[in-house]
Length: 185
Image 1: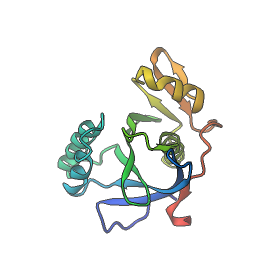
Image 2: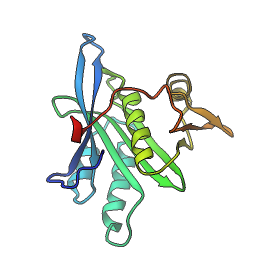
Image 3: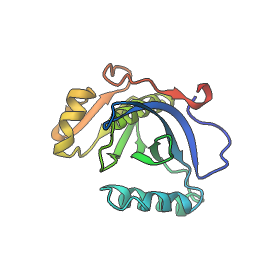
């Protein structure tokens, strides 16, 4: 559903969604892409996001996956949301461990021009996790400034320490944004 079998580029379009421009409240079409980490250009696109908090972390992990892909199949996945102009407005990196999809990083563009990038990405990741046979999205260290968003707007629950959060992918009513798989778009 979300995984086309052929990739002719460094990123694979996997889903469509809508985000909202904060300046004029217009709805904007957006595409969620997955990076395949088959060449170094994947990392360079993310590295160019200099003023983003997690771009260095994400590009370093992408490079590590690229260098070790020949030895094992990694559990890491890297995603971005692009607006109609192909500008990256959100990024996420995950890994699957056991029955969980671990959210390593989730970030919207620092200029905060668009609404709903984070919630759309989380809704996509919920669907992605279910397709992979995973039951939860787990956030090991949710930054304090984002906890209200995760808990109140996205339905995450605390898991032990206050910074540990999870959501059950089979019962996540707040993660219901319209995400259209590319195969059906």
